[in-house]
Length: 126
Ligand SMILES: [Zn+2]
Image 1 (cartoon, rainbow, N blue to C red):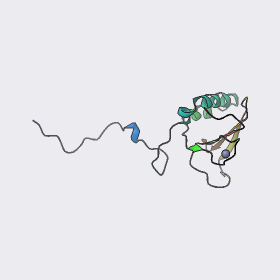
Image 2: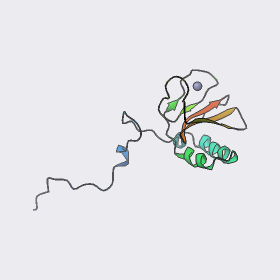
Image 3: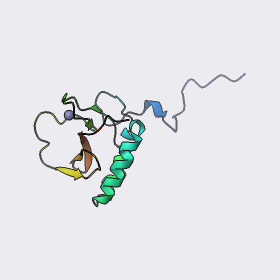
Image 4: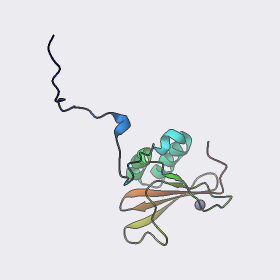
């Protein structure tokens, strides 16, 4: 019986459960789409309406970093990047207001990346 080579060969594929992305803590964030498919479908549609096809593609893969913790009853906002810290985002930031049928939806985009989805005056997300 041949002995197993004690040196493991380099593996070609990484286990998807071990993938870490963009986080110092090594935490992995699921896409917002997995949690709120209807919201993301709506955002895609609204972004196309606004003439933002690149963001309409990007929003499908934004990571869910957690709910906004401002504590306001009417706020259902979602963080999709690390915390900006207190105060404004600064250079490279722009706000993209959308026109949903209900309430308010705005995206905070920092250097082309969606950092925050502002969701106000809307029913709880499903
Ligand atoms: Zn909030």
